[in-house]
Image (tube, rainbow, N blue to C red; front, side):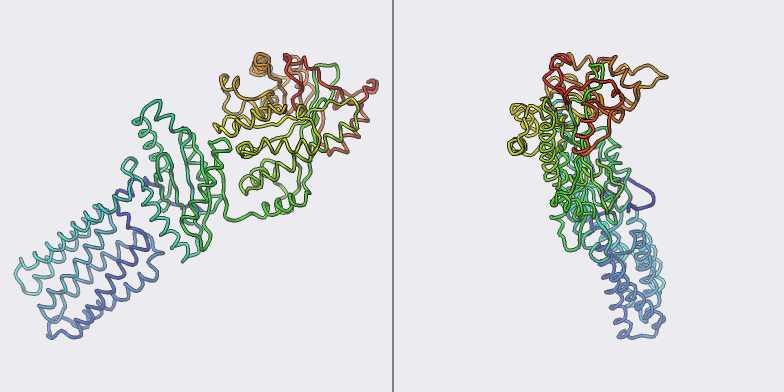
Length: 622
């Protein structure tokens, strides 16, 4: 899960400390310094002549240094960054004790060289502020302890000066090397720095068994900003995004500018679901639309494999309509496994909800929408939307879409055989990921040929955001499907990125008004003006329009008054398997819902929708 604690600016943290300041490198380097100092101290204590000072105390200090070094090598990678300050300060104290109590003066001056270890360690891993503090402490101890051996006051200046000089030089060189891992524009890690951090994180996860998640985020349509407003404006957007996201991250979470307008986020100790939630939080924090791919690391996987899998998720997010997060999981959820088996066995259920005509005195069924229904044992409460998302995330959507379309066309053909005068419109939803597949239109054509269902009586529904995707393949598929005779419906119209200019040019025939608009029709308030605007808009653009989610007689009456010709919802009928639907319509003479009356004459089944309805738009929407 996400780290708990104070959040900070990742960019500031990266600039303030060396890119080498990872738990593993710090533990090994500081531990090595301690072990080396401890071993040398023990050797010198054992062989040095003289009876000055306190030989046992110096030996004890050396032994403590050795133990601390071993502890760092073993447990250091698990320690927080702040603990290393204590180790460095303790090293300064141990060196001072050894110099003060060493058995002879010459050896004491030699031991003062160990202050350089302190300066080097602090220079490599700490910010300039902390480096200055540690060097100042070491110099103060050196200037005091060397003269304490009976030497002149100036005797400590040479080892103190060497400590200072080496600390500053190592600090400068370390930061110059670290700058190669930093993106100059944003101050975040660059690709090289992120790959280094990823390698260290995988090594840490391998040892500790903790989780590790990776997110790749790409700003949508960023090239247009550069083209229309200039690169300076684009740079400002990148800096603003980096600042906004850095403030939302915990200290251990590493954000990088991976290249161009792409960002990478490393999340140690984080599950896939927690990574998705954080990614959604990041996306909501900026006004620029962005797409993201999320994945998690599994034992034995390399960093390149992890990045590649996240990149697949990012690609799928782009193809599905942009401005969304797609999980490319390394593990299949039990629900995904169960869904895969259900698809292979064909045990998924497809039910049908009638679409009715409001323009006649009675509500006559003129079409059906195919709806996926399935009860999962692994996750009984999963919704259809959740099921579709799992199918998209685990690369099952192609097989699922094909199964539903093939089943729906076969069932619709059975309906048409049952009702002699039937001119049924069949509506089937399509995933944006499928639309982005090059061969999708040809697959639909093949299914129509196999099932014998007329292309002119098929309507494919795609959500507005998916139609808005600037995918040449998706748009080409829509044009090709319309050439076959298939009609395209924009589902959930009004909830996406509506634009009159785009709506007039998109390859579409039908609008399905989102049910949230219909739900706002209440007897205690006026009808929403936007519904009337949509009805007029559909006539102007020669598009059919359907109102979804009709649940009351009052809503149906208002929609009829506003000029809506088609509707669907629980007010008329719930969804039914095809056999139940045939029986129900036979009993009701092609009528559904509240419009059915005992005296309604027989119509020999469903009747076709008059093509003159809704401004002469061809056929019915489904």
